[in-house]
Image (cartoon, rainbow over all chains, first blue to last red; front, side, top):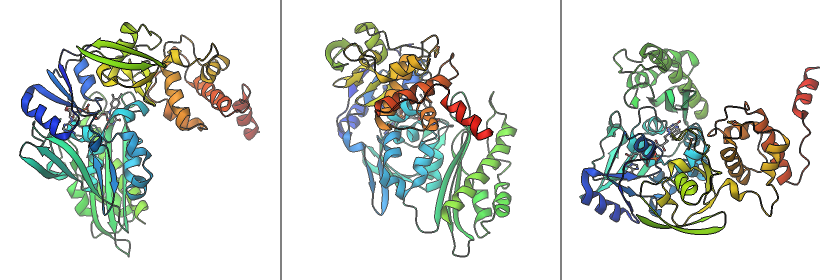
Length: 287
Length: 173
Ligand SMILES: Cc1cc2nc3c(=O)[nH]c(=O)nc-3n(C[C@H](O)[C@H](O)[C@H](O)COP(=O)(O)OP(=O)(O)OC[C@H]3O[C@@H](n4cnc5c(N)ncnc54)[C@H](O)[C@@H]3O)c2cc1C
Ligand code: FES
Ligand code: FES
């Protein structure tokens, strides 16, 4: 299978990529790791007539650990996995990335592509939601910041404008008394999540939950925070009993999907199970 | 058409390619290096794995134009001076293949793995080969083959055939 024909441009800087995007408008697509886009183009599910390859932009490949963690959009999964500094500041990233695809997917796939693509079954979106990340986008009008809570709009749709480039992901570091985790029920053939759950918790000195963010992926049309579960956790104990009860708070209204791999009902049940596991693991990491 | 220059197995090639030409087609059709296979063509099977600038990639999911200026190693580049690479020797000695269709990709993924982790555990070998599917062997002998190669590359004596099974038995008795 060969993609339909397109013009190929290699952008050497963010400015050059933005210029090309402005020039070619809707016809153009950004090419990052290509591990979602190229398979879709080979199946002719996508047929952009212009590809703007941002792989040459070295400034978008970076991991900086300071007061916060900032990651360039073109940083590959493999680089995330191999950064000792990142592992120390935010171990949940490596925990999640190690569960993505296979070594070749991790050698090419990027954090920016994973977020911008908004695949409903992708792993990192849930993790970045649970961590409360901030995304930086650059467009013709300049730079803006987007809270991850406002980023995912629908299946394969984000609040990025077509003429914008996602450039940086900013994440808070794990503080004292904080822990995070990502667990995933794998669809054995594809390796994607049937249900993936990410949790971040902050514990008080007495072991009660001071704050929590919980997000799921794979189960519905877009990665989503489970605010009912978060509310049920906060102020309560961090015991297995309390967490199990809080995980049951998943709203019946929550929109989930059913397919040949798992029905909607099954996913709803598994959302509760994997949410509980993620929270318990996060609590363990925090204490 | 775009002009690209790529170093494959130490030899430099300059070619004109279309933007949509996949790296695997460039290697097979333009350079005649048909050791790299196409299995699924949907980025899942790993038959097309080559090493690009030191990292294994699925060459059906990289554009040939993206390899401009890159160094590529394919299965044809493993043996040196007519001598099999320890991985190839391992697949031979430990019967790591049956039909052989997946083998070039398996070898290149295993090559990448051993470059980065010269002494992998069995679990690490399996995790490192997750992107490669084999419909024949059941993977057991592929793991043994990689263990054989890893030992050889560390200048150690590979464990004898059946060593693992003996260990399991002695634990049980
Ligand atoms: C065999 C296989 C298994 C996989 N398994 C998993 C898995 O288990 N879990 C998982 O989460 N994912 C999995 N993936 C998907 C993989 O993680 C993709 O690499 C990822 O989803 C997309 O990242 P990319 O860098 O490859 O983006 P690309 O494919 O290059 O781009 C994806 C989309 O995002 C846009 N885009 C990319 N970067 C930017 C940017 N900086 N600014 C604006 N738009 C941008 C592109 O235009 C395109 O529309 C798998 C893929 C394969 C092939
Ligand atoms: S042919 Fe490339 S992964 Fe199967
Ligand atoms: S030996 Fe036949 S597919 Fe692996």
